[in-house]
Amino acid sequence: MTSVDSLPPLSPEQRKKPAHFELRMAAMFALVFVPNGIHLPYFPLWLKDSGFSPDDIGLILSAPVFVRILAAAIIPARADRAADRVPIFLVTVLLSMFCVLGFLLVSGKFAVIAVSLLLAAVWSPHAVLADSSDFRPRVTNPKVGLQQQAEEEIAVLPPPIVGAY
Image (tube, rainbow, N blue to C red; front, side):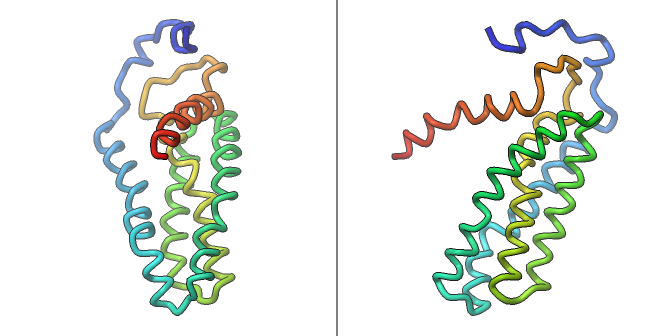
């Protein structure tokens, strides 16, 4: 039995589609994927063209891993306590955009690492925040929160990871 099975039925107001739902969904995905579309495919090439050594590039790309792990746990847990998760999600999306643009303003290994760490902190909670934001009916059961959702999503990771090897 999952936690969803034990929830009370949704009220009529919870079943209503939010205003401008399609536009909000399109904007959400555009804002989430634009930084990735800019950053992920071209970042290593930009680092190489900026004169960074292969060791520096490896350090810059690997340094944010620990920040991603911490931010993906801490920020959604804090968002669970907020009255509405949408503003938190939007702040992280906008900060991600600014961080990606911040790479154009900095030079030097440590400045680029600092921007990478900031980007990792604000970008990593996007999936959990987007999945649980006001884009679906609200459930007022405190047992179902972002932390539980994150735990459920992490639980499905081992099979694809093991299958990849």
